[in-house]
Length: 199
Image (cartoon, rainbow, N blue to C red; front, side):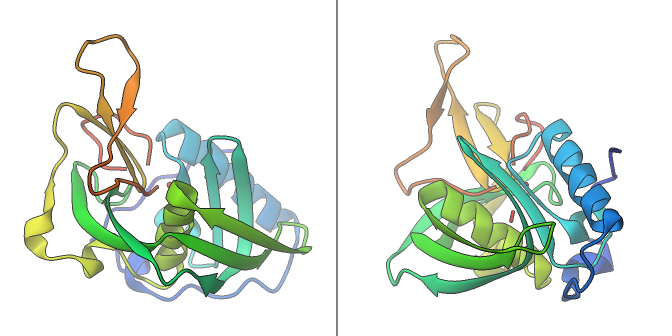
């Protein structure tokens, strides 16, 4: 396993549609392992292969007890009901976006790194993370969904994961308070100085 450099939004690979994976081989397994290590080190809860310069349809995501590595993921069902949330991105460090619309629940069809077909049903923040990361595979960033005025620097009382924004506990007790209101959600686990895995 190796840490990989996370590219920022000016890099053209982040705006390209990633290629489908056709070979399930040791290279793919190494890529997934590198992505997991890179995501955790960032730290983040989601990372897509284009973010480390590999234009292939692969993502990793971890949120609470859920951990996935998805190859050629595709959203096959999305709830009509949406919510607005605050998202960060490891490729847009230092900033977050408010009012990013996402489906409340999604069903994703994919393959695992060994080539086995899988389906993932996700809701809430995990659904937001998967949507965020799958967007990366199509060259789409969360900023494409919102007005530029809704993009802002990360505030000192926020912790940001790729796609997830959490307010720091003002008492200084070390715990965090999930940011609701407009219902925050999404995909990165950096400190306040980083905006944001995301899919």
